[in-house]
Length: 476
Picture: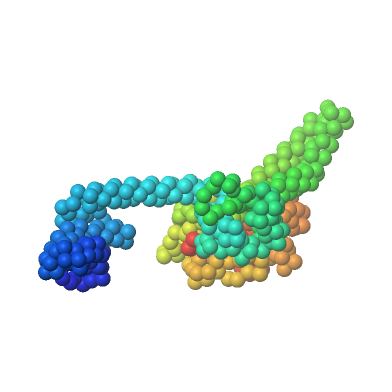
């Protein structure tokens, strides 16, 4: 720190009151000498001379101490203002001032170490709190948030510190519970409440008053637990059981009926046995595919809040899909024809899910397309994803992946219901084409997670085309 001093006589700072101290110290001598001069015990000139000598002696005696105290004051002020320990420029001859400087330096080092330790401990404590998965906040007596861990900032915003809980949470029940703890009307409060922003969530809160031994402004801690995902899992399990039990009832009844027939009237009929076993095998395969699709759908729904972060090579996926389905296509005299623009790059997505949706749509194109025709897979860049009434689409450039077959036209009524769960067109049922009615539902959930879109066009001239749009950049 740069100190600017105005120096006066004998290098003593202005307003130091050095002369005042010298004169005050000399006052008793002045009274004594004046008394002696008044009563002619000594001559007046001797009294004046003696007083001047005493003043000069006090000047010589106090000057070094004053100068060293000035240096000591400047040095301590420098340390108090954040300066470093550096007493090399000080010229101290008095033992007492040297000891004071040493004591000040030792005290400065002690408290500097304490401050460093406290800062390191605070950083360590903050790092530990940031690793906890649940939001935790410290509040003062007025309800102001003094500190919040990473989970809290991710849930409620990075700028929640110093804000009042009344301005953060839009739940009267929560605010009233927090008020009871802060007013010492309750030691702790537990409640379940809802918040609407930044998104609708169901939270469990534990509000606990800190013990009186705790130091600092914090008087209570608030810990939250997000119950939204748990409820989603419960709903997923409930839907899975309901869907599985409903859809498995018919094939199980068919298999049960044929088993009973084979055990009774058709027990000795080889032709009936072969026919019935084939039907039972088909129903078993249907149930297996149904369970697999239901599990896949549940898994995708469970990951809806997880942002895709994998770098995906669409060319590689198209090649793998073609290799996997070539044999099935050849059985129907269908040729898979990929067409990928040269400047198509990689995208940020979930590679497994992207492959699943492309393979699912290509498999459907082969299954429902006309034999001795082509199934085309075209990939190209587009400037933006077309808007959707039911899906929140991402902004910016995207990839359009179109899968076309030369099948019969799909009516507008059927087009509107294609992504419904378990929905299958009557024409496909009549033709005994196997399917669970979940493929397009799975595709829709994948598209929703990626903030993309899916469109379908169908006519008698060019067949049916499913186009999926996937953002090229990471989902915000």
